[in-house]
Image 1 (cartoon, rainbow, N blue to C red):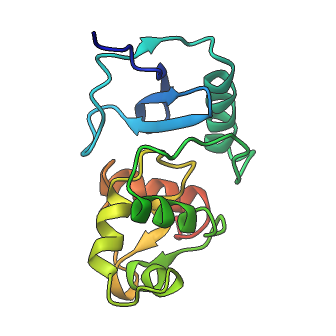
Image 2: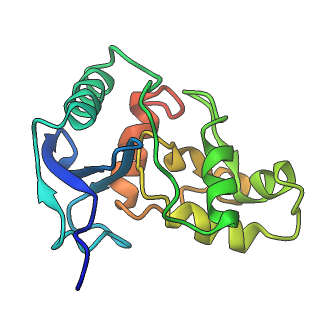
Image 3: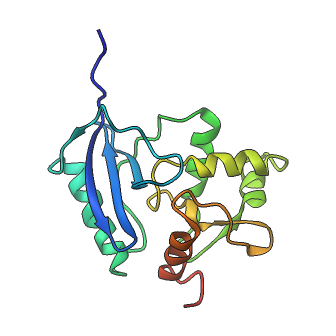
Length: 166
């Protein structure tokens, strides 16, 4: 007998397009733009727009997009990744709003200076977009590369945070 997936989800219409948010009893486990690369198969998830964690996540995202919030204060559930992916996602949380880093620098911070490509792959699989700020990672020389939600959205997020000129 198949057990029911413990994740619940809700949709949010952001200024950058429709988003799907997911949570478990531990916290937010997903924030994706609908249709982005590496998006989830949410077919087994229950829609619950009244789930307290999802209600709070949507409220904080609204404040973020309105320029009223730069940091998120949400419980996170990042257990749906490998140990390496989880270490990369934790490192992303240390990048301050308005700041950026490179894939190579992130690898150095993790003690794996030769692992820029592996770091890039883990960043690309970040399940909690915006809240875990994968958009703050740039390519060599500050190149805007790789964002599962699309480079237009990455650019818009970095401009919103003041990391790029308008």
